[in-house]
Image 1 (spheres, rainbow, N blue to C red):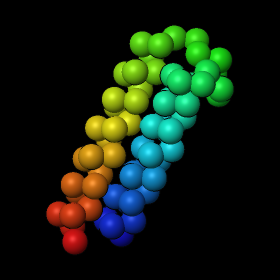
Image 2: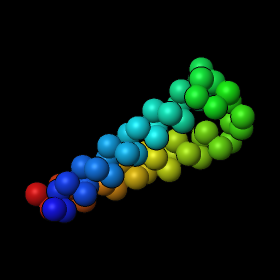
Image 3: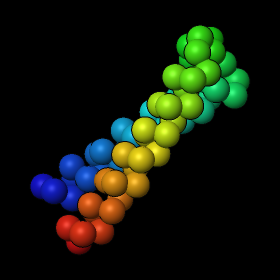
Image 4: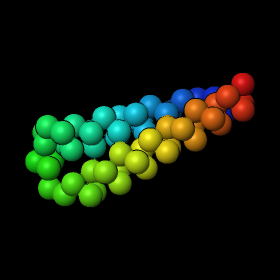
Length: 60
């Protein structure tokens, strides 16, 4: 169960990281409303990806 939760968090964080980076570079999903929100969101998504990957290796 813990492995699936770690992989689920990794998938969600990867998806949100892609969305924030696309909005930052191409202004596609949200029209590039606020660059600071995109940068902070991408950073938070990257941090969540790192933490979920680290937790996955600890569970394994």
